[in-house]
Length: 71
Image (cartoon, rainbow, N blue to C red):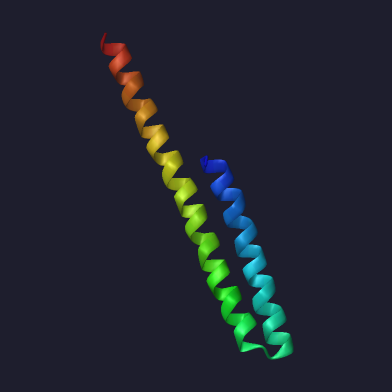
């Protein structure tokens, strides 16, 4: 999966997690609140993965560009 898809899925999970937390709080459901916290954390992780993929790609592109100049 590409970095953009990781970031999109991460954002969606964060939003869904926050919504679950809000609904859980409004209804007094500790279970739903907990599920929301977990889903939001999953979203943070997915976004971090997408950012890491971008960083690796940018670093590789930079190295390849430098190597190409030296040829």
